Each structure stands twice: as C-alpha cells, then as structure tokens.
Image (cartoon, rainbow, N blue to C red):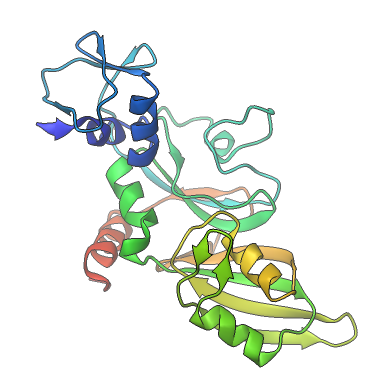
Length: 243
C-alpha cells in the first residue's frame, strides 16, 4: 500500500506536492469515490482517477532543457504563453518541470514525470545546489555580498547561506556580473535577494543544477539525462555527495 499522492506522482500526474493539492481540491477518486484525505493509501488493485482520467503507470523519463527567456515553467498557461512543455511535442509521457525558473530567467531546468525524483530535486532539505550568473545594476559592496552569503531577510523569511562571487564590474555602465549558488527554490529568490541589497537583476541565467550544465545545448534545446546522471542525482540528494 502506498500513499495516494505518491502513486499519483509515480504515475506522472504531477509532483507530489501538486498531487496533494489535487486531492484536497476533490479532483481525485479512488474506486469511484472522491477522496480528499492526504493519508489515503491505495494498492495496485485500486482504480484511481484524476479529473476523470484513470491513472496508467507511465515509463519514467528525464530531460534537461535549456530554457530561453520568455517561457513559463509550468505544464500549461492560462494566458496561452509558451511553456517548457511546448519544447517536447513528440513526448508521449505527461512531463512537467522540476521546480521553476522565472519567465525572464534562462538556463537549465529538468523535466520529468517522476514525482519522487522531482521531490528529491526540489525539497530544500536535500540541498541540491543551483548556480546562477546575474548581471545586476550597480556595484555591490562587499558587506552587501556578505549579507547574501550569510542569509538575507525576505518577506517570506530568511534565505539560507549562499556562495557569492563577483566575476566582473563595469564602472562605465555601473553594472556587475555576480555568480551566486543557492540550494533553495523560493519564488524569484535570486532576483529578490539582489533587490534586497538595492542591486536589481538585469539578466539572469541558471548555469548549473547539481552537477549538470547546459553545455552543448542552445537555448530551446533539450536532451535526455543518462542513466548515470539520474543515479548520480539521486545519490547526491540522499547522501549529499556524488557517488
């Protein structure tokens, strides 16, 4: 017997957290009966339906996408804007993004239909590192960068410690290129961190996710993760070290 939200995530419906939202919203039936209890457990013989569609176990797939700017990190968008899923028209599985990247941010984002894998990659307790390159307005003072390194107060709480390096400064344009590595995923976190030290982000790219980069890809291109890469990511999340 497995928890309902875990079964849904494994079937590629959505992440475990999103599956919980669907359950609470009354959009899930077990053996024809609507259930809103997150503690519900089901077996392989139970019939589970989500929004009228019966669950069918899909083969798990894993992709790395170089997301361009101007693309939404969701499976669909009410306003009809381009989403990360639109880059996979030939994929039969119902994939969705692992975490998010802001509309105006480019760089690496993982795509999968494996809810457990998505959970390992996104929950803060697993401390999966993400490295960004930010072009910011102004030249941050060393004391301000130390605030980012120690953790800075945002409206939704303190950020965890970060690694921050100044790559270059341009005194003519009064802009700086800053490298920052975090392991959280608060909404628009990097942008808000720089806003907090009054150096707004002008351009932002996620260069690295765990041990993965977009090397060899152009914006809008994707590739499948190798079996070795998937194993390495799981080991990293579970042990904090690459296997």
